[in-house]
Image (cartoon, rainbow, N blue to C red; front, side, top):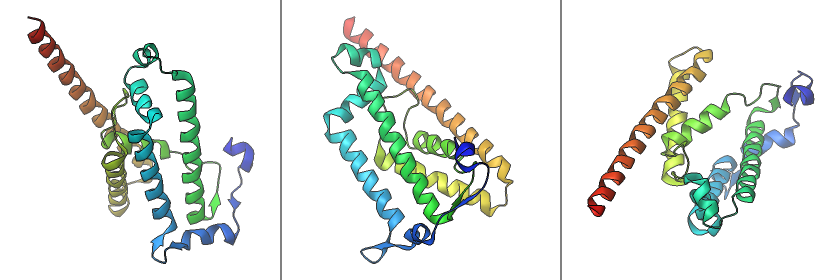
Length: 195
């Protein structure tokens, strides 16, 4: 899609777009930080305090059980993808305000960072577990620190995705071990209760 839209040529944006990166909310909060904080608060409220948010955790944990409990899983999953796409576009726009131009490869590899931040923050790739704050926020800070460290130590830029992949691998490995241990504990508890 990026190749089709840009025709493999860099697209420059006008100053009215790039100047947005210098805007300060209340005179001292950078617009990007303000939007980030607002999105975190909205996501926390949605996931913790709304029926749809709790249903989303249930679907992530066990879609079949959620459907049997009366949750309409298909519209919930579809709306989740739509919301996710909207926030991905918002993040892309914020990046454009800072860079001022895009090319066909703009944003490639960012999916590794997003997955790594969520998994480092405690989200399970198996679904049903995770939090926005402190989980994903701390995961995001950790990923930014790792990336800054890679740049500071002059690690080859082509190795950055490999480092992110290794982080995801080890985080998923730890998550699967933790999940396995929790299931064993549940089985032992059930066996004690039934015996």
